[in-house]
Image (cartoon, rainbow, N blue to C red; front, side, top):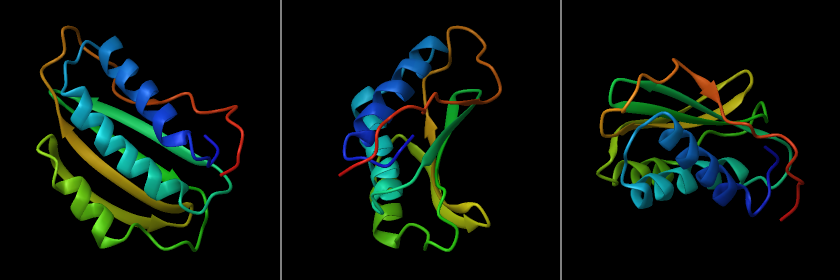
Length: 131
């Protein structure tokens, strides 16, 4: 996904659709707010690409957003605190690797209606850049 002002909303739509496809039920408003916080943190630089990854397990899903800007500082404590404040968030955090900073949240969901795959990367290509 390219960094753009509409990227957080686009990512939220795709993530919620994937959760529904996997059979999860969730507080979509709360999950959407968490995704917007995670993705907004990643697109703050306003250029380049980000990747959004999802990994379901039992009645939780890990959502991780990576900024592909090596050397960029990880998410600030205020973003992590804002994410943690949501009741749907079991755990969250931020770290930096050689590929760039990542901010993530483990979100509690209602058990799926069917067994989801182990991991996926949301389709995030083809979005234009700009702020």
